[in-house]
Image (cartoon, rainbow, N blue to C red; front, side, top):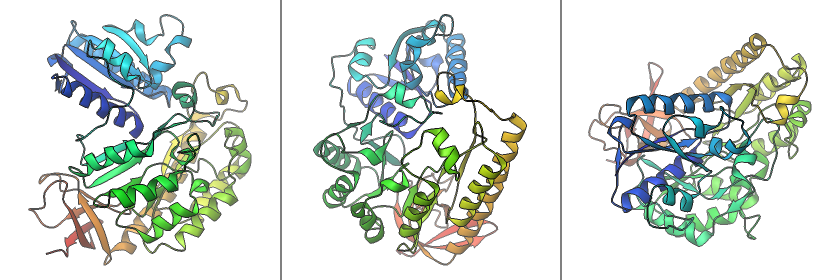
Length: 417
């Protein structure tokens, strides 16, 4: 059986697709590059925005036109919300779609694909990217008013540490970096009597050959154990945090349902960490133009972003997501005003990113080559994209380099030779 596999959305979704790939290849089936070559298509869907679901629908329809005999399966977050929709808006109404499977229900997917029964947990050994993904938990216990993920993914569920160590050891044989991912990784262990800090300490001890990188992590959920590892083991845990901010206004944060931190507590957590880390990549998500956001609220966000040592920012203009509490809020802003505020934040972020890149020129970096000989891209521990100067460096190679700024590019000159 030839299977076309297409993934939308976050790293957790991409990890789930890697598990599906492993499950199919273990069963002797082939992954193909286009729907035209496929007998079956598996689409792993995202529900974070209406645009993400619109893109899914467009791709499924295009695949059906390309291969009318295709048998399509849609899994993931958008699929989990399908029962609440009315015809003809259901995903199962799309052409060639035969099964809609919420989340990453592997036994249900195996049954739909007519494979031998599988357990809910399937380990990956070799993934398609240079940087492997390891999902440590699923679900989220919070209820941000703009987010449909809690509805789609359910409550927080942590994977056992022993299982994660075994999978990480397998991945470390073929990958120089493992990205720790999930829906809300800061709550890892709450349901099984552990913590993210304890898990990372175990991984650092038991999988010492690989660089671990934390994906999106709430700033106020960095405990003392994790902070010590970030400060003291930069070659084993990348000195990089992506800490969602969303807004620098406490009033807007309350409207967003993000009750577990304030602008001040977020800033304190970041400043404590930054004061101890000589090299520190810091990113965040920010939503511009949330319903009810005033000029003063926007100014508070701009001020906080300007004050903290961000090295990049992901700015999202607020977009309505039907079914979320935020969609029912009053005082939605005009699209023109939302776009203007997003542009303000992006301009500020671009300046901070350029300044940080310039500050790293002349410094040392732990580098992993991501691209091949044509692309030449590499990534540093602090999440900078750099260009290796050695034309023979292999994709996936890890080396120490001195960085040099040239024509707005950071070059990585190996010092390992």
